[in-house]
Image (cartoon, rainbow over all chains, first blue to last red; front, side, top):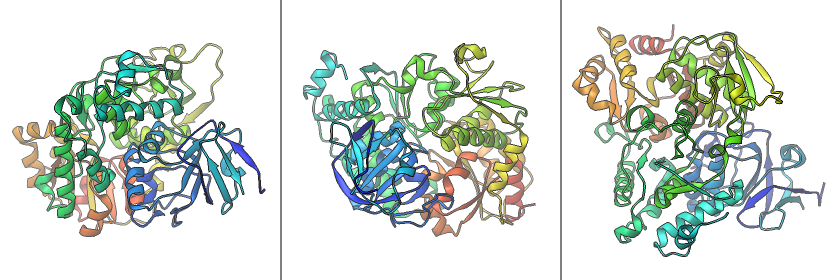
Amino acid sequence: MSGKIFYASAGMGRKVQAQALVASDGFSARYDLDRIRGVFSRPEHKLAGESYRGRVLVLDAAKGGVATAWMLYEMASRGVMPAALVLNRVNPIMVQGAALADFTMISGFDVDITKAIANGAEVEVDPTAERPFIRVV
Amino acid sequence: MKLNDEELAIRAGELGPLRQWAIEHQIKVGDYLGARDFVPVGQAHIMADTESLGAAGVAWLEHWTTLPAGQRLVRIPTITDPRGTDFAHAARLRQQPWMIDLEHRAIAAFEALGVLMTDTCINYQTIMPPVRGEHMAYGDTGVVIYSNSVCGARSNFEGGPSALSAGLTGRTPRYGYHLDDRRLATFLVELSWTPRELSDWGALGGVVGRLAGDYSQVPALVGVERVPSADEIKHFGAALASFGSVALFHMIGVTPEAMRLEDVVPAAASLKTHDVGEADIRTLRASYAKDIGAVDVVVFSAPQLSLVEMQTLAAMLDGRRAEIPLLAVTSPQVKPDCDRMGLTARIESAGGTVLSGMCFYQSYAREIAEANGWTRLATNSAKLTNILGGYGYRPVLLSMEQCVAAACAGGTLT
């Protein structure tokens, strides 16, 4: 799968490269995370118990409430945060949070991105490209 | 995004650096989400509890407060969602001094920006309900979905930074539910059973929210047998928004934009229909009750309780005694009425605690669980049930009566 590239409809933030943490599940900083320990804490989440620190999270859809708009900034201030967020579908809160935190995020694909990227793959995410993309390296 | 002269001036910094930051933030968000321009808004509502803000967020707010008044004050009525504590009961909750200090600092910062500290998520019941067609920049998903669906207002989910930005610029990017075509139904729900009490309305919201799956979805419910009360539809909407990240629903014959099905379903559209009945609600409830024989605490919160809910709770507790902590959370607007009408005294004389201006899950839920030894929690709020698992709780969704019975039986569930 090395070199395979998937284009997103929108992106923001900086170019990053890191190991992907992938699941066909949603994302909300308040609902799903223990932000102090840097792990998924919601028992029903498919990544429950997994550390997200420094990983490119590849998930299905933004979920939950509005708190993530502040929480990404708070997580960044402590350095306990993912490297980037890659979603099939966003909600405005993720975009607002990423904008405040200067966090890397891309979303909107022709394929189900959670099926296209293997868990643990090394990936490059470039939201600055003319067409934002995620690429397996 | 296309900017008018005033917006260009704000962007150029002519109205100061805070408004300049605000409009740059809004443009970044609007560009990502496909907004072509801005729309003026009537109010902003900011979610900003300090568990979410953290020390970094509070410091970020504070650094703007040294600007001259003309550069830092919001331009439209800007109100707040619940805070992270009720100062009068922080010790009862075993919250730490650093939490209280952060809350004081955040409040001082917001006040310096001209924000009205309403501290409520039921502003549509208590402050100034929006008017049909009025554009808003509301935070709190429950506020947005109620205002959009029941009042016919127009708002997206505006997280704290974006709601503050809207307060400062008086506008928000025009995308999503500000647009006519985004307000049409995307799927139908055929109801064969109409809930009877609040927790069932919340559970129905949870079921429909799981069907929806993301923010772009707009369910239209067909077959509701009666017009729900404001509190019933509040619980339904809050859970729908929580489980599904949904910001708008239609209830055919009930909500203002959907008097007829064809009002929200284009003639040529062929929408997927889901049948939902009592069994689906029971299944959702049952999924939260596994292996819980007793609870440590009973919580009524999320959304804050209305005066009518407080009256109902007081009546259920009359002549009884809660043997485990029973927390009832309401708004700072409702609480004085509860005091004046004796409801607070009735609840507290039965062993309950009435909290004001906070919300349970926004008040350092993980830390107060650890400090108080609370793991198993009973509530009649489906929204709260959905949220608290990530904070380490094992929640169970019961009716208000069942919650009261559990509290009075020392936590034992019957």
